[in-house]
Image (cartoon, rainbow, N blue to C red; front, side, top):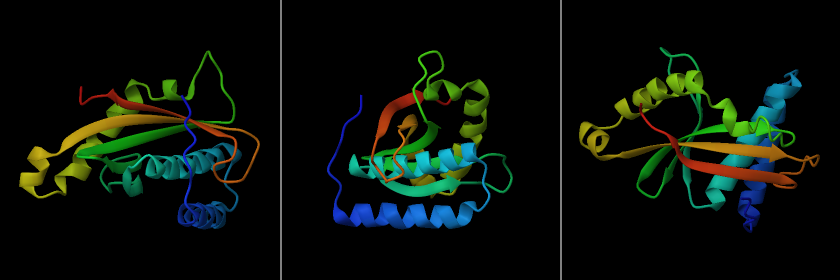
Length: 159
C-alpha cells in the first residue's frame, strides 16, 4: 500500500540536495545502478516522513562484502533496511523478491558488525529488525513524484 505523506519544505530541500550530490557522484554510472541510487534516496525520505530516524546510508564494514542500504531507528527498533527499486511493477517478479537467501546471508553479518560497535549494555537490549522496502519509480525525475513504496517490516530474521 502506498501512502502519500506531506513533506516539509526542509525535507524537500534535503531531497533535492541529496539528489544533486548523487548526480555528481554517479558520473558514468550504468542506468540500473543509477535507478538503485534514486530508489535508496526516495526510500530514505519516505522512511523519515513515516517517523524513522535514518542514521546510516550504504553502510559498509571493511572486512565484509556488501553494504546495508539504510540503517534507521523505528521507535525502539534498530532497522536494517534493504531497498529494491524497479522502474515498473512486474507481478511475476516483484522488487522485494530480490531479497533472496543469498542477500539475507550477506546482510546478517553486516548487521552483526554494525551492532558490535554499540556499548555492550545497549547491544544486549536493542531490538533488531530487518525490513525490505520496494520502491517503484514512474517516469518523473522529481523527488517523490510518481513513486510508490511497499514496506515489509520484519521481512526476515536472524535465521
